[in-house]
Amino acid sequence: MHFQWDCLCLGVLIISSVAAGMENEDNLDADVEVENFDKQSQEADVDRDKSSLEVVYQTPKPTGEVYFTETFDEGLSGWVLSVTLKEDMDDNVAKYDGRWEVEELKENAMPGDRGLVLKSVAKYHAISAMLTKAFVFDDKPLIVQYEVNFQKGIDCGGAYIKLLSSSNDLNLEYFFDKTPYTIMFGPDKCGEDYKLHFIFRHKNPKTGEYDEKHAERPDVDLKKFYLDKKTHLYTLVLKPDDTFEILIDQTVVSKGSLLENMIPPVNPSKEIEDPTDKKPDDWDERLKIPDPNAVKPDDWDEDEPAKIEDPDAVKPEGWLDDEPQYVPDPNAKKPKDWDEEMDGEWEAPQIRNAKCETAPGCGEWVRPMKNNPKYKGKWKAPMIDNPNYQGIWSPRKIPNPDYFEDLHPFKMTAVSAIGLELWSMTSDIYFDNFIICSEKEVADRWAADSWGLKKLVASANEPGMFSQLVTAAEEHPWLWVLYILTLALPVGLTVLFCWPGKKSDEYIDFKKPDVSKQITKGKLKEETEEFEDDELEEKKEKEDTDEDGKMSKSMSAYSLVKDMNRTSSWIALPVITTCFLGLCEMCLALNLFSSLVTFSE
Image 1: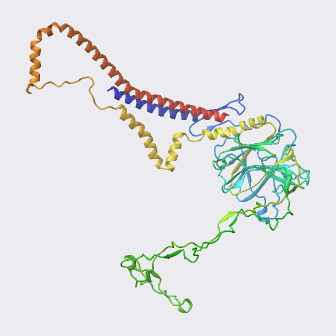
Image 2: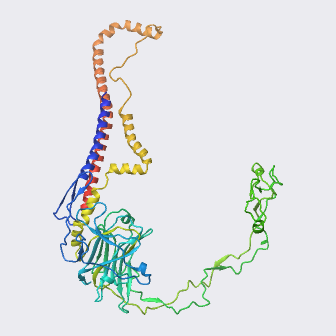
Image 3: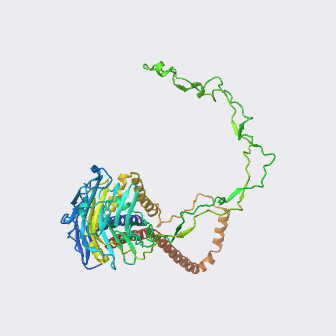
């Protein structure tokens, strides 16, 4: 009976563990504590019910020197819409007439938090604003940071920004694709090509012309940032030591040197191939040549065909030589509008001969072909190493007349405005919380007060583990079978090991001798000897009694140890299972704690 109680206790433990896991999940959804990126003492208190998360949003304020900030909470003040046209295009499609709006996010919005939204499809959009003060590339880093949310995903379009070059004739109303810029940065996607641009225009010190230098593509998979419909934070860090870093959601996805990791390189090669050099006519690039000393063997017959008829083949029995494989369809009728003068003589369409369906074949039987064992083909001399091989020819090198060396490409053209010049086949692209500064701590503080809250709301509104499992099973019904097997396996093992068969450990029945059976000769002799030795046994009665007492004690001790071993073996399974479930709960708690720590960092 105590085994059944063990199983009942184990079942209660399992149910308690599941309930504890669900309670931990609810507690995570109910109370969320957020730490700042720089781990300062400020905290945000969040109260959440089952359906929504309420966050007190305040427009972020920069905590240090900045060159530009924009939250769009006060609308489009300071922003200028372009009124010009793209060049070399028809006026009807060259207009920058794409529509912009200032709106809240469609999902996981915070009251009062608004952003710039690209609203039109298949139209050109252009909008720009002047910086608070121009950024001059001298001895301070440049940090550019902003948020993007592809609220409907993205098919083909960009969400990059341009930092416009300073000039006396810069007019934002005429901002278009040819307006000079210093840096272009941000996501772009078309088809299955997912890009994260970092391009800067480098001035050739010899000619004064500008060339675009593209950063090497990141090694990480960017696909999820375009399709998950979440707000992502894009950061570009340029340092005076000519290095750069690109971050998404505060994680570095690409870094390198302006001198080494740009395509094409900033500095050209010192030497180039001589464009006037030509390969000599007698230059031999052949690695192998036919052996000039080889001779075709006398028995080499080039006239033998590759295939010959099989002389051993025999026509199958029942082959219908006189029956064609196809016959005119007897049910076909000439169309009424058939004109023999125009269309020619009408013929019924051909169908397979029904008689050939049951026969090995129809029509004239032809022997099958087989490989000709005498075939050798056209003789060719074997190839040998070319003794005159001179290698692959290449033009000689000459000094590059356009060579220059710019050891500090960080010193780019100053920027005085920011602009978005975009075309997209998907609408509702959300931009927010632009900042341009020189201190990473300022950008991190700005992100904590803006993007950090968005991430918090989105994380808290995500469905719990149980809801995600149900949703996944609704999309893939075969998962229900996996769930049932996963639950049934431990239950079945528990019943198998914790519910033993009925045994009586308390009573042992000794089989009584059958008096009706005939006494054997050996038994009779034994009784006679016992009768004769009765007197001797009486003398040893005391010794026998002592020995019986010792054996009784020994058997009692053995029975006790046996019962203890049996009991401990049945207790061990629920104890081990309980420890395992406890470890599972601990792992769940650590996972939840790790999620909070990861977010706060």
